[in-house]
Length: 278
Ligand SMILES: Cc1ncc(C[n+]2csc(CCOP(=O)(O)OP(=O)(O)O)c2C)c(N)n1
Image 1 (cartoon, helix red, strand yellow):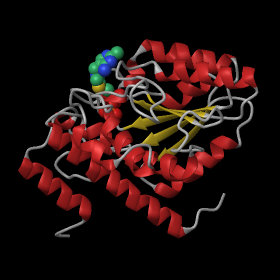
Image 2 (cartoon, rainbow, N blue to C red):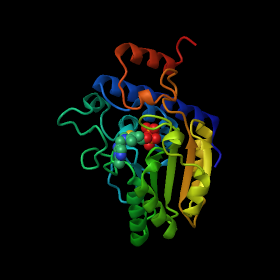
Image 3 (cartoon, protein in one colour):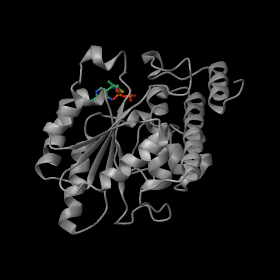
Image 4 (cartoon, helix red, strand yellow):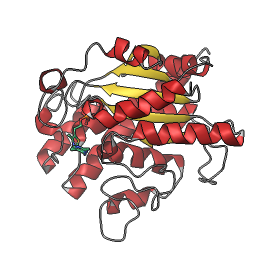
């Protein structure tokens, strides 16, 4: 489908808002995961502000598309998107992680409207997603399931069991999106446990593979549309991204995987994201 320039620009603005909002949450809480929250901003913006069939007024609508944040540690970005989409008031974001707040340190499907899977324990999104897709098939429902994975997460063996199931049952209603930023908790993915050849790996699990630059909004939108055209197998969008994208001192640094910025660092990051001083 053709995407007008105005839509691309609007979604790029949303991605910027997601980045600033997520960083602000992490700064305020003094805890969180900036690197992997920043790398998924375009993907989350494209999904939540354009692609997904969801209704914030009816979060449990049976035909809604399901989105699973399998790399649950990056939930700040998801929470900002859900708030901006109207699943709950934006003011709730300020209470993230506080006792009694529905926004937990990692996503909790029993507490937060719009969260489909409790996650944080890496590796399980594909299996749960495959289950949701089989359920849709059995019930004759038309919803699709999207699972956002980390590349470090792909080092977990259980993920490939889920992929095997999705491939066996030819779950064409499942789209995995891989945030391939090549940095995990404490170093480069390709050094800790190499994943390559990634395209061939997914193909051998019977997935249709689409490879994109995960920060190019047009490519993200096109890839989501291309996935809709695949009717005989699950799909994976391998999105090449940069951990810490948009903040110069955070980019590609494992140091910023799970550390909150100081007040000064946050202000510097915010100015960069707003494009000030350029
Ligand atoms: C099963 C499991 N093992 C270890 C961890 C600890 N952990 C949290 S985040 C992370 C790194 C994940 O890397 P990646 O998937 O690449 O995430 P991103 O770089 O996108 O933040 C690890 C090992 C965990 N949450 N779950």
